[in-house]
Image (cartoon, rainbow, N blue to C red; front, side, top):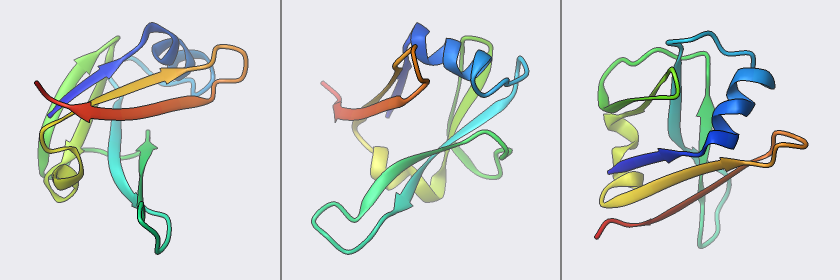
Length: 97
């Protein structure tokens, strides 16, 4: 399980989300409906870790995944990027080598 955050995404967290340095950012499995891909990836900047499977400091923030969500990211590289014009996040996963 790995997290990669682009410089564009860090700037969006700073400017669009106005996050304080050292703030925790939760990445989690989000249920979106009954389909082949019933889960998506959510980002929450108002949560503190309770039982983290991973905490990684990137760009002055503490990104974390709880153990309860680790199943979605197991053996994956999670990449988060952002469109600088409107702060929209692009999230994808790929298998770890």
